[in-house]
Image (cartoon, rainbow, N blue to C red; front, side, top):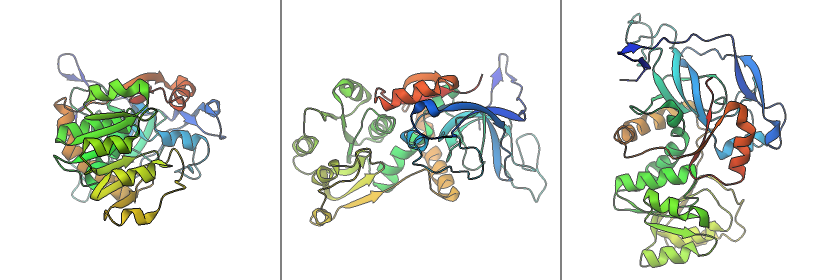
Length: 361
C-alpha cells in the first residue's frame, strides 16, 4: 500500500492543506544560472484525474539547464515557466470524487489508490522546482519503503531513463552486455545498478576523478575517456563480440565508435547529445551488423506513455529499492534558495550521481 507519514506511536501525521500561493523558481528570462529567481505564484489546481502534491524535494537534470537557457519551451504555455522534472512529496488532495482508502466513491467516480498523506514520487514535464505540483494520479509512484523523501526525489528521472533505454528499448537481458557513457552521471549510476541487479555485464566511460566511484558501484569495466579509447577497450574485453546495448548521452564523435562497439543485431539508444551532432557518422556502418540507433526522450512523451512507463517501472524495480538492492546516489544537496549554486555545480560536471534540492520548509 502507498506509504504515508506516521508519527511516533503509530499515529498518522496530520496532512497539511494547500495554501493559495507557493514559492517556485520561475523563469522570466533565459541565460546563466543567476536568471533563476524564486517568486510567489498560485498553487496549481489539479484536473479531475490528478493529485495535488506538496513537494519535499526535487533533483536536477541536464534538461533543466537547457530550459534555463531557453532551449526547452515552457511545457505549460500561458502559465509560469517553472523548471523541474522529478519530485518526491506527499499527497494533499486526490481527484475530485475519487475513492480513497477511507472513503468509498460513488459508483460513477473514478477510483484512485491514493489518499492524502501518501508519499509519492514521479516524473513531470516541468514544475517540480515548486512547493506544490499536480500529476496524473496514475502516473504517481509510491516511494520506496523506509526511504526518506529527500532521497526518493533522486530516483524517478534517471532510473526510469536508464531502465527504459537499456531494458524496454534496448532489450538488455540477464547475461547481456551494455556500454553506458557518462557512468558517474545520474543516469550512469542508475544504469550500473540496474545492470548489476539483473545480472548483466556493464562497461562505462567517465573522467579520471570518477573512475573509482563507478567501480565501487559495480561496473565491470570503467574506461577513463581522457586516457583510453573506449572502442578498443570494449573490443578487448568482449573478445571482439561487442555489446548488446549502448546507452549514449554524449553524441558527437562517440557515435562512430558506438557503432564499432555494438554487437551484431545490437542497439544504440541515444538519450542525449551533449557533444552535439556527429560529423563523421556513416549510416552504412550499421548495415553489416544489422544494428540500429534509436533516439529517445522522456519529457515530451504523451501522458499515456508516461503513465505506462511509470507503472511498469514501479512494478519491476520498486521491490529492488525496498530491498536495498537499488538506491539513488546523491552527490550533494541544496535548498531551493540555493538553486543558482545547484545549477552551477551541475554545469561544472563536478557531481557523481544526483544533485538534490530540498523544497519543503
